[in-house]
Structure formats: C-alpha cells, structure tokens
Image (tube, rainbow over all chains, first blue to last red; front, side, top):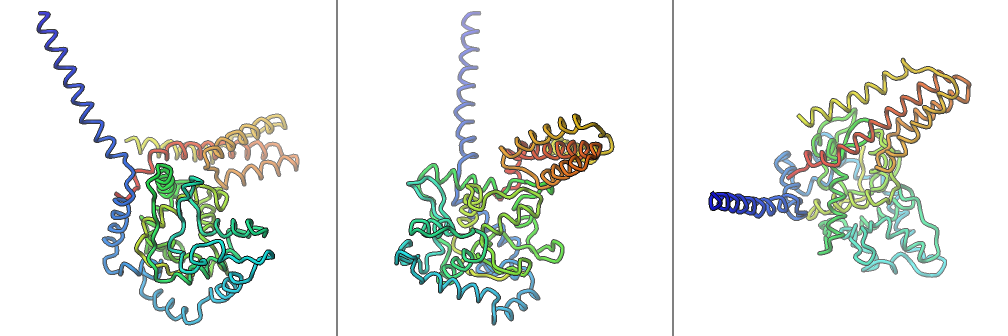
Length: 288
Length: 105
C-alpha cells in the first residue's frame, strides 16, 4: 500500500513538473515582446486588406484609399497648403539663436535628412525622444523659450526637417534595452486601448475602419500615418504636429488629452513609427 | 462571455449616467456631497490617465447650477458626473487586458 502511494505521489509530482515545464515556455512565448514580428504582421494586415494599394502609397493616408481623393490631392500638390509653413521652417532653421548657434548644432548631420530616425530611444535617459521634443530641448539648451508643441513654429520646423528627408525610409531602432522594449510595448498598448466616452481606440478608426467614412472624412490607415507628419489640415485651417494629431484624436472621442509630450504619446509615436519602418517619409502632408 | 459582461456593465454605467438626473434632487449640502464624490471619482480616473471630457463638462455644469442657486439641478449634474467618472474608471480597468483582443498578430 505504501509502495502504491509512493508511486502515485511520484507520478503526480512528475506530471505536475512536466506541466510546469511545458506550460511556462508557452506562456513566456505568448507574452514575449517581439517588435520585428509585430511590424511584419502589421504591414501584412494592411497589404492584405488593401491589395490594390502600393506599399509606399500608404503614407498618403486617405488619398491612398480613394481614387477621386487621390486625383484631387495630386492637383492640390501643385500649390500645397503647407508651402508657407515649409518656407517659414526653412528660414527659422537657419536663423541663429541669440548665442550664435543654430538648430543644426543640436542634430546629427546638421539636422538635414534625419527625420526618418525619429523618435529614438535615448538609453541615457531611458525614454523616447521625439523630433518635437528634441527641437524644444535644443532651443532651451541655447537659451531660447520652447515653442508650443502642437502648431505654428513647431509645425514649421518639423515640416522643413521632414521635407529634407522625403523619400527616405522610416528607420526606427529599438535598442537591446528592456526599457526600450517596455516603451514600445506601452506605445502599442496605448494604440489599442479604448478610451473616452465614445469607447474608441486609435485602432478603432485606423486599423478596423481605414477607407471608411466618418462623417465627411475618409479614415487613414495606421500604416505610414506618422510618415506624413506634420500636416496641413483643412479642418484646422492650418498646420499641426504629431502631438496635435494625438491630442485632437483624444478630444474627438471625448477623452481628456494628455500633455503633448507625455510618455504615452511619445511611446505611441515610437510604436507607430517602428511598425511603419521601410515606408518613405512623405511629410509635410496635406489632409482634408 | 466575459466581454459581454464587461460590455453590459459599461452600458449599465452609461445608463446610470443618463438615469441619475431624473432621480436626483437636493439641498446645498446634498450638492456638496455629490460634487465631492464626483470630483473624487474623476481624480481616480485621472490617476488611471483616462478622464472623459464629458465628466469635466458635467462637473462644470453642476458648479454653474450651484452658483445660480439651483441645487436640484446642481446635484443631478454632480451625480451624473460621478457616474461618468465611474464608467471611465471601469473602462480603464477593463482595458488593461482587453486591448490585446484588438491587436494585429
């Protein structure tokens, strides 16, 4: 009897150990943060959903979803509405600060043709640094007051920097640092999380419904959506930065927007930019 | 099933938000208590980074009615704001795991 009990107990212990050993790796694999697999799945989803849209055309947002809009937009690009902002940005970029330095002194390659590398993860600080944030830090480091993150001067500067990078493929890196992976994952979580009284997530419009109309507008696909930033929006009657896009999206779904460069927005921009890697920078853009 | 229950709870919370004004009425003291409860719930939603603009607007409406001496209306608005804030807390809490249902894999 004792032997039987011992055999039974031993068998149960072995079975439990086997379950633990086989179960644990499965759970770990399921929870593993894998940006490369994410980006592959993300891009495949949009390619499959819109097989007629050329990959590089996804950066053109709603225009890539609708032929009539595409033609109208091409006509509009002859005299693009962001042109004044672009010229202002070019002038501002080269004008020295009071201390004689310029924006070029703050950025690699003098700030020219580098838009595709933003946002990046700063391993010293342990946080995501967006282009908008880097520009204001540059100003403050040179004794100048920061600009508003959402429009006007900031939109002009980022428009110029994007313009010098047009056509370059988005090239966001995620360093081998658990904090970078966490920032990426938090950005992904933010993107898919429903919020506001309307119970919408970013994905509700830009994954589930691109190409569909929401009132008079055609929703843009999430793939490549950041590549066109900053944008002139007819709805705004002016230019807006990525920060402006995030804060107004939140307001539209009746969620109180966060601060323009709060961690959540920086992380979601990091996520969205990473999954759009390989698509060309097309900013500044124009949207209805 | 779990999703259905969560949705039902959200619908109930939203229904409560609409239903409360018809039931609420009260004095200045009642208003103050209702307003404090709404503010506390909205603060909690803030900690979860998920406040709703409608909660803030309804709190403002409550304050405006109280300033005008209409405490029935003010209390009703404060209770509505509390229900909205609680719905936003429910949303933030349930989305901590539900967001994965939408993820492209």
